[in-house]
Length: 164
Image (cartoon, rainbow, N blue to C red; front, side, top):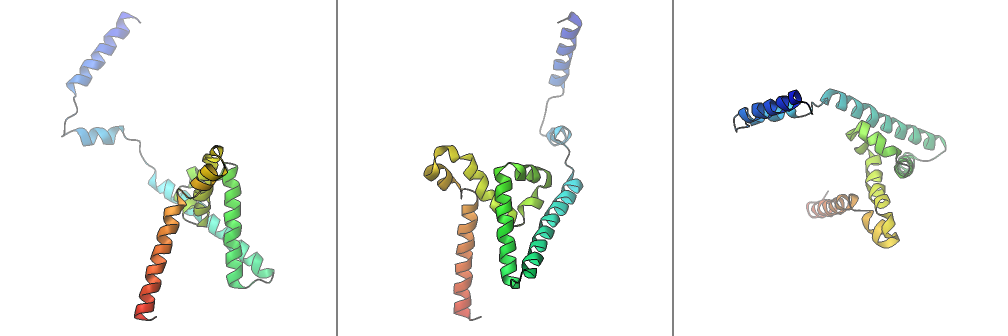
């Protein structure tokens, strides 16, 4: 390094020591150094991608209804179809790319649940079918399922006691 480069580094170091972080200026320092978030852009793409997933689900409902299924059966088949498509896309790594781009727009619909089940299973498949794939499959989705069942039981008991 040249002498000039060494001098500039020591001056920069000296300036850094003169501008020590204190409790008073810490918040402004963090704000200055933190990456700026694009909330409006993120919300827009979450809305567009989440809405697109829902439109695709509605298309499946309409197709299944046209094939002669009832509304309830068409809705269940559409949900199952979206889960299978998401599981396949997760397996190929495509859904992760969609999730990075769309954020919550890809996790709110039922597709987020399918991704939450498949992704940990793929991550631990090297550990074997039982301890890897089987045990890790519900690492993320397990608490959601347990709490959903628990709340459903509580609501059913309250409805039974109160009468509904």
